[in-house]
Image (cartoon, rainbow, N blue to C red; front, side):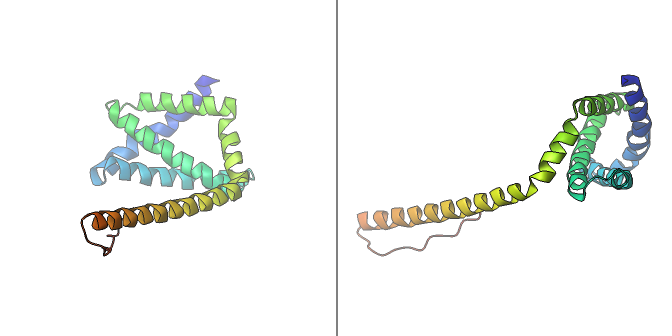
Length: 164
């Protein structure tokens, strides 16, 4: 089974890593080139994902995963002296492990089904951060007032805005 995954990954990596990425890295840096190549790869895969009836949310999460993996593969390619064999081996191992374990489907299904909950948690986190920031500002003002009183000045100095 690994041989089948390796042959598939080798074919893909001969094109993406062995042929396309070097000229891209002449024009762009490694991060930019990997992001562009990741997005092209994602576009290449969207139609087959739609044909097997994946939900749009599942596809969106998969696209994020695929671009992140492409960034890692480009880093590995550059770090191994531009070895297509190394990235094909990594690609095949990743595909085999994830497919046999079903981790991609499990993780993407969980993200897709709980996206609403994630949005609610994020709103709560933002609200807590705002409350914390207000509390921090109030504490800063209080400290300055106490400091001013200790120095014989009873007036309040304005607090400078700090960017978070």
